[in-house]
Length: 371
Image 1 (cartoon, rainbow, N blue to C red):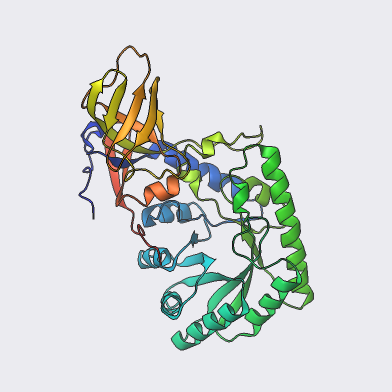
Image 2 (tube, rainbow, N blue to C red; image 1 turned 45 degrees about the horizontal axis):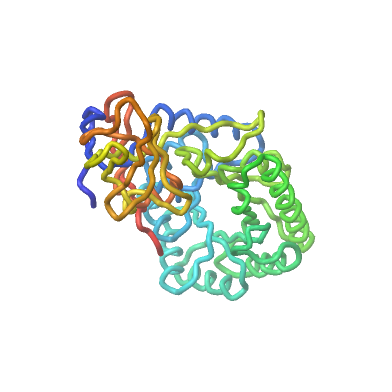
């Protein structure tokens, strides 16, 4: 575990760097905006916890009406079930006797769901459930355009649903139809068209399953970039946005239509200037081990003329344009991560601040849960 970067009641100026910091006022506005936007719309909210990996945040989401949470790995789900979350959907295919045994063990304490896109995997999940004496919910994952996991929509998915329904130890729960590739399409027209296609495929698959005499109560999917389209589709019964609580530099590149909700940036990495050898360059103590760079470098927040130019393991190099006051050693700067999810996974603690004071410290309990 990392040393605590702050104590409750500390001044923000006393947070040790680099630190992962949440502006609680903004964070809570984001929580409330999503909860209110889904409430009464005929769909359930099941936020994806891979974004935050933090049980304190999951409890806050459930307190605002979320049906449960999504996780991506068994280890993530274990951390949340251990913290009292009682409805978890693992939105992934889980393979291997050890992982399936752990999945089944969780089902003794919580409602647990998992995805399948292969008949042999369904049989293995069923065997693990029977060995543990539990029931596991299983959803068929269909490929709706992301070209990742998922069986073909329609009849192939219906065949797997039939197998789930007749396998002891399993309960068929519905369809997982997540269009991940649509989340960062930059225009609302592109995102709307991608989800319209996904909804058609999901609807056809639901019809095929029901034609086989199997109820299909759940059609789930959606992310922060598209959730309004799934909510309004008439097909999806559940949405799974995750990044909306934090946001990041990549999501800021998405254009929004006038009727789309705007979520604010609440997550930052706080770093300190450790060197300023020349006027045109400053070095901060947050490099490759402090940010995920898969979506590009972080943005310097609230400071004009500073660009995060390059990084090494423990150094972030800022290019300094013509500014009235260039950074000096000891200055503290706020950065917007390029991609919030894997950046969170680099830290043991989220430091919650309100105004100028540290209000809470939340452990990132599912950090590093790769299996």
